[in-house]
Length: 551
Ligand code: AMP
Image (cartoon, rainbow, N blue to C red):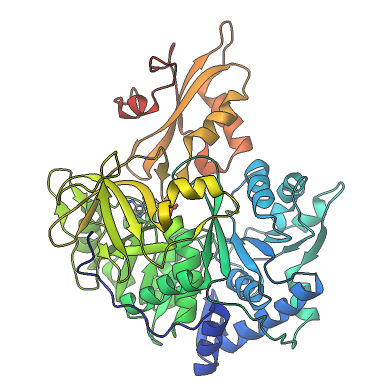
């Protein structure tokens, strides 16, 4: 068991619930800037007032303690306002990826039993398609043009009509606008519904280490432990302006940004769905001190020909995580802009970052594999490296990374079998293969799980295969990740065709694209006569994954 040396101390100042911790932040400095969105900044008191008004609206819409409410939005002020309102009424937040198509959305809504959903007006059509079979009683649209006035056309393309109004047909839910609810209930401050630290705060949907999407359930305490570790680890203070380039609907965004930095005394900077050129400008415009971004965003910033060292002059620290970080990219970024990017590791089931590189430290590289270390454990997290039989391996040997600690999710929502498999006795089997050196540095060198990691977005091959099997020409299919310079991995489908049938790569990609979030559809399709199989007829996905690319 490795426990030393952790990169943080155990946070002592957490309040029992997220609502109580938020209240402490507001009371400490109500007028302090809390969220900047283009040309407007909301103070902590503004955000509090808005979330209280929305909480009153939620009560009026029938939301009760323990109800699940989904939030499917980009990085806009409405996201944390909705989260705070849901927690105030004792509800459970279900962040969902706004890129989901109807079938993915239906799975998450049905599984969570969400009673309400916040989404963009443009998403109402897909939500209407996804709603049958789910328990959605209401949907509130959040207009991303609210809370700013400059309407940068790069971010907000001109709109000729209300996108939600164009959706016709029967709706099994009541449709409303968040802005109207905020106005209608302005000034109301319903008392927070009492919750315990051990109550569930959030369900985060993930393909997990095995099988289809399921909701990792996490308590107020677990989430706060990770959030406050981040505040301590990053040394976040009242002078910080934290650029949120990781999406709030993913675990890093919801826990580290949506909760961690929101509870810190600093100010969050949101750019909606971030574009690299707009992000670059934001660094100087808002005098950003801290940024949290996937490595692909740092690469995109690096690729901007006009980016200079001066653009990053106000920066104190850059963080990344969620996907393999090539050491060469970190080195090139530092050489050009003078900032070293700190790596961190976590997964949905660990509530994001529980392993990381300390401020001022440099992650070592594992020479035999060229892998940059993801860091060392945060306080309270212990790890073991296990062989295939679940026995701990000797120091320096590779095996599955297993985590334990209070920060972890407590299991999957209403999935006892999947919970028992992935969380044996409350420990978490990550599906990642790691090596730990004698100083506690952890290197991820492979994956046992079949998950594909494309720009930090996780793709479960089975889901893509199931969709491609619906195409009439497809006989067999195996989906794997292939190396991609920008994304880390790209989705590749090996397909064999039914006799006498034909199709093209373009057609299959478009077919998947219509049915799955864009990042899940294959970038490439390779047709082969016969997929490799085991003696029992199981397709050897791993053999295909390790095959050299044909293209
Ligand atoms: P998710 O549940 O979407 O957060 O995905 C978690 C998975 O992302 C982990 O199990 C790892 O496979 C991968 N991952 C997370 N952080 C890193 C990192 N810093 N380097 C390499 N892979 C990572």
